[in-house]
Image 1: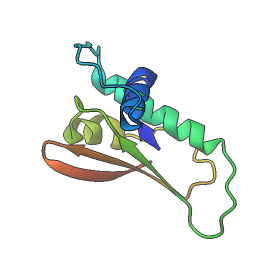
Image 2 (image 1 turned 90 degrees about the vertical axis):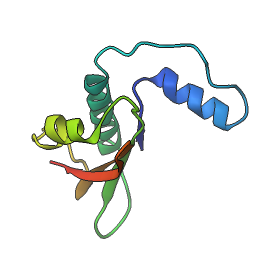
Image 3 (image 1 turned 45 degrees about the vertical axis):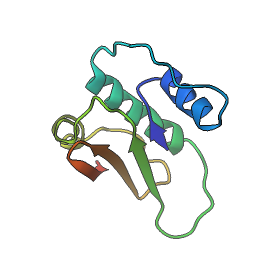
Image 4 (image 1 turned 90 degrees about the horizontal axis):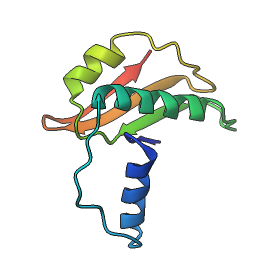
Length: 110
């Protein structure tokens, strides 16, 4: 699952990938991007934890974060370092995956 700042950004990227639309070239201000990014991750986890999966063995959820204004250090400090209290649903482990200027990173959600 991929976490975006908002549904509009996700739809815009999806439509561009399918050749149906070009990405907007206008500026958009994002107020509190880290908070919005963290909330988007939470919503992805909540949505997926409500679904039923038929799989035997360990089941993992990996959330790919597409939030260019976020940095891994901030995500580690403000999100991953604190228990989230989110429903785990059927997942044995939940991980976040993010790329930033320093490279690709992965961390476990507790």
